[in-house]
Length: 247
Image 1 (cartoon, rainbow, N blue to C red):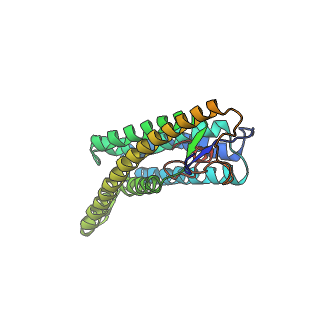
Image 2 (image 1 turned 60 degrees about the vertical axis):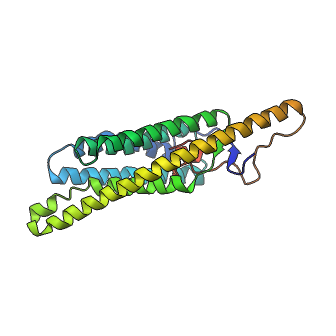
Image 3 (image 1 turned 90 degrees about the horizontal axis):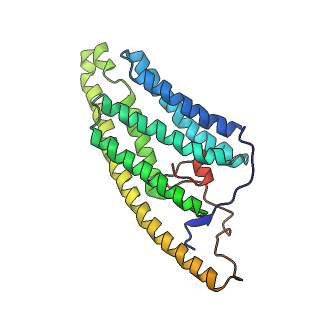
């Protein structure tokens, strides 16, 4: 089997653990973030950015804890990517609602994210994890940087002093440039994942045919590298990544 593919191996672990608690916390923070981001005051919008940043950090932390403490669970496998998508897609939708970003940007990103998540889940049902791709890691980083930059209420700077108007405009422009880069890498990494997925699917079918012809031979599942990949296609280190689910 391809070096980027490994068979999923799991063991039974209680769902009541700190990694899952952080994942649930991220979901709970999403409506808090949305509420604060829609408020008119600068302070509340700044707090929305803080909540977003905290939620993004929990995505890294829960995956680290799940791997280092052996807390990988089916619950985390399912809920972690839901939490990730709820956070990032709600942020993109909010920025489009506020006319900071055009809706077509949010729609393209949403279609890519949800579509690839579905495709990866289909592979997972076959017991296969596709290792993280570099483009996916870059995409995730650019999305977080773009969202974080645009969520900060830079329009408060001219209110403090009109001389800061140029700085506010420059920072918003930076956020838009980051969004453009994130969009390009998002589309590119999605296409590459589909291409890899089609190739892997053919390899699986070929392997299955070979197993039918020689049932006594051992299946080419790759356990030589110490088990399945612990990062998802996007390079997330969240719990879904630890479980091998797309994020």
